[in-house]
Amino acid sequence: MSTAAGVRIERLALRVAGLDEGAARVLARMVAQGLAPGTPGAAGLAGSSIGVLRVEVRPTTAEAADADLLARRIVAEIRRALAGEAGR
Image 1: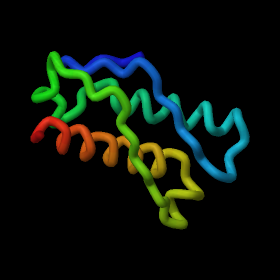
Image 2: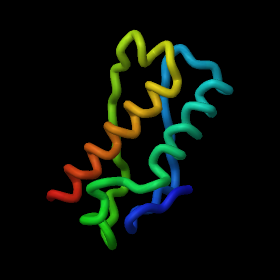
Image 3: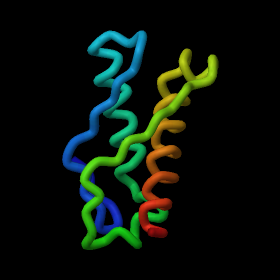
């Protein structure tokens, strides 16, 4: 799906309560696009395999009402989790 700094994302699955399938697809695309330019902290993961990375995001009221804000928050949480994996 997306590669950045030696990281390959083969599958991105989101479970989002309250979104219909179309809106969930749009959100997933926005998250993928947010990850595509580069993922800070991922360089330390080159050549390694995480397998599955799970991130839980509890959106604020504003994020729940705005797909762009929610996508940016999800991207930030994924980057934070990847940076943690790179430090291991």
